[in-house]
Length: 465
Image (cartoon, rainbow, N blue to C red; front, side, top):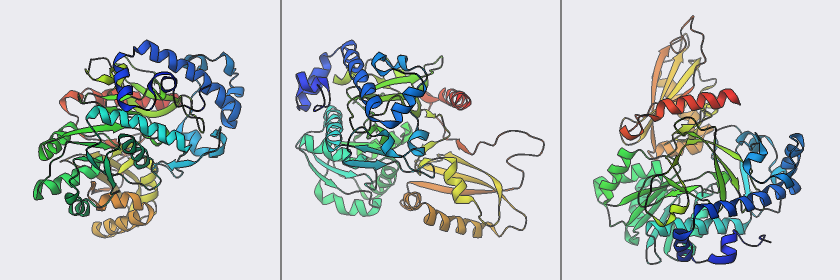
């Protein structure tokens, strides 16, 4: 019945009006939204069980009869994971012919691929337009988009959002910030939509050379420290908002509202759960796509640790629940200025480098406004001077990970080296697993309690899987 429209609400009430969608959201009770989600959840499970070879196999193996599934709890301990997307052919997940595809930026040797129809990309862009309208974007505004377009979905989704609003916009893509600054001033852009870490370097340039009038800035791809946000807002004399998403959600998981207190979830297109929340409410965000026909994902584990917020933000999107800023990852993956990083990246980067022993550790720090990766490296006997090792590692980074090298050259993060004697990271007689990645960025006072909670949750999730 609903194959040709993205949601039941659009079919019956909302049409394609951004203002109507936002105004209706003011009146929509969450219990009614939950009823609609439940109906679409049932349809999604049945569709996947019928058309996707992956879900057909998995459901059969776990004795799941799709026609009996009404709510996520009916699926028991069934989840779709990032490992599934990496290990299996993308065709195993498809339920219809794809027309668009995107990749994750790569935290393992194999990137995840996610496919969509053109209609699905367009519809998610429309939802993004609703969030941007809520932040104040209007047809008379002038927008510049500085997202990276290489295999990534964010720019394409944003393009559909801006087309829906009808404002003037230019795709600058991810130019070096200095070049961007030189080229865009004459356009009189008053809305900047950019990568978070890249914004830090642009703001340093603007602080030295001058800013122009800006209505607001929207950033995405990683958390923005509140102290850094305050500095950027002070330099530009404008609000800085954040969006939250993954390639698997087409970048449309959530967006801040003017209150800047967490992300409103896109509950028109997804059904969200928190997996195994602890006593403080922190758990892993899990989502099921409700309106995707090409490659639906059922109970997809995001690995992002967050919690639901229940205070009133006072905005029109209040019917859609909010989550807190992402506190960490359950799988030792960290989002920082370098990008999404995992131990595999550094194993590939450091392996076989002359002068290095086997043990190493990487700490993400933030001594100033940008992230700094501190590589703690143990040297082998007869190692060359530290400067030679650093030069070799720089060459390897450029050759093996040009994406991360480009981010470094743009000033999106810093790299530091600390050379240690062999055995320093794992002293003799101490039997423990060496944690390869550490997030040592100092939390703000408001987030001080998160460190222990994230550490505990990460241990719990990893020990249970």
